[in-house]
Length: 201
Image (cartoon, rainbow, N blue to C red; front, top):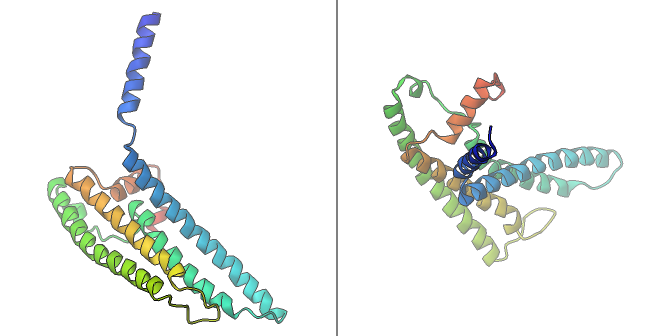
């Protein structure tokens, strides 16, 4: 192959790679969902460490009552911060017995209707989560446990997780509106194509 033809081929490949490069907004959203999921997973790991520490503390007579409050906050954080990531990766329980029997066009309409309802419901949740957290900050409300910290601090995970979940649902709604395959469907199909059915168990 001549050098001119090789350089032409390389430029074509480079232009194709540039054309499929994700939009900056897409990269930012995906990074946010991934980061929140990682923080949620870290919360679960910290819960494990705290539970072991509490068990050892009881054996040696060390007061560990405040750990119960921290574990409760971390459980809430782990649940809400991982929702967007789990949703995008198809790890939510979905009843697809009807959808699998529909034609692609009809299935797209059903997916769009479901995502529209989900957007409204989760938008309501996110709105009140933010209002609830803001009011706790505004009135300087303290936690009613052994560790009296401002309650808005642990409530932030509730608000942030709900907003990220809302963004994830809106993102999927927009993908379906444009005629694309939902991410949660595409990723599950990719895992199944590789022989990975672990998420279905």
